[in-house]
Image (cartoon, rainbow, N blue to C red):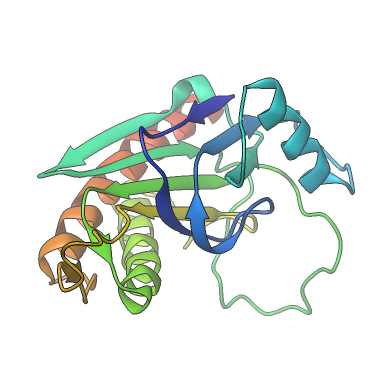
Length: 203
C-alpha cells in the first residue's frame, strides 16, 4: 500500500471507489490487489486497509493490480504527481462496445496530484481534466496505443482556502493556467516514467 496523510486536511476531488467526489479529506491510500481481483465489496475492503494503516476520518482509497512499489513521482514548481501504472489491459475511451456493468480487470493507472494552493470547485474539476489530458499525452509519448485502461482513477488534492484570505483561491487549472501547467507537466513526467517501466516489465 501507498498511504499519504498530509499534515493538514486537503480538499480533494477524486473518481475513487472510497471517498470519491469532492470534499475535505485527510488521507490517501493506493492499495495493490492481485490480478483478477473480483471482490464486490471493494469499498469496504479499502476502508479496512485504510484502518489498518491508521487512517482516521474521511479519505480517498484507490486500488490497482500494478506494483505500488514501482510508483513514480514528479515535481514541477510545487505541483507533485505520484503515479502507479498497470497497462496490460488498455485501449481507447471511445472504442465501440456496450460497456460492462460488472467488475473490470484490475490494472489501472492511478494518479495522485497535490498542489500547495487552494483551488475553486470549478478549478478542481478542471484539474482532473488537465491531469487526464497529460496522462493521455504521456501514454502516446511512451508508445502505448491507448488513452488509458478501463479502470484508471485520479485524485487531485489542494490546500484548503485560508479563512483570512478568501480571495486567494485559484480559479483556473486548465493546461495553460499557472498551476494547471505545472500539474500537467508533473503528471506527464510521472505517468511517462510509470508506463515505460510497466511496458518493460510486461515485455
